[in-house]
Length: 413
Image (tube, rainbow, N blue to C red; front, top):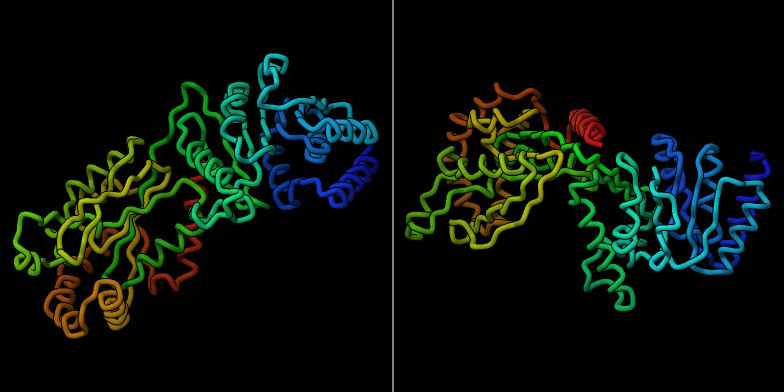
């Protein structure tokens, strides 16, 4: 293809799309798609949803040796796509006319190295079920617009009724593919959200998840460190397990006895259950995480379903105290913050979130929290691989951990 001619035609296509309200891929998402395709170097690509052929021509320009089949249900748009291909001199793209859900997949090639789905968003699950068998092992599947202009991030009841069914189906598909053991999936925020799924080979097993332990005194900022790391990679395969969800069940004790619980002592935690759950996640099996009710000082009847992920962040004041837990960790962090700042943070948390009085928090701090910190929490600092001063305010340390997690995720993809 003549590069200058191709780019001239692509400009004409963008102009036509704007004038005639034809949806084409956003620039940022398009650049991310091209970047990923260049990494994978597919020889044969299948596109579901040609529109006027803009994405197909961009892919052809970026991968001059690739053969591309693209399916479009609208006859007028399919004809326009063919005309634009001819005008650009692109012979590597074949525009096929028909409804992709009814198209005879037997007339296509038996295997594709990449599949790009950019058609009806509410039908992504059906497109995936029909065409993913044509994807070669190690091949990559892309789905555009999975954020759907922010609607996919809203609770379903806040989505306009006219779009609610479509968004529900899109959310269900996105959740299902992220848990599909046959694919390694990443959700890129580029453009309007680009789902990237790599098909695993039949004999390929996922690597052991990586466990990151984050410890530190109450109010040290360990949760801020955890959240800062999680926020960067929340679209990836990361889960947070909080140790304070694993306080022991005290339903067999009278309420007055429960009030005497020392929540800063190692014996307050049900580490046996926590270790069992971490081992389940390491075996790629889901768990039901317990919920602790601080109002009644015992475990709630409800649980939270947790699916296995590639990175497990285990956060809590004493996660480094138990040798069995430490042995499960690949990275051990200790968040170190001055005592005066920790007590202020604890005051605010316990008063605002746990309904405590000022006097009760101060009394507990002096009689229990401070001595327990000195006796049990502070000594665990020696087990840490990295000590992070100043908690969530230490951007340098957080950036280092983000870089490490990024390397781990890239290995798993």
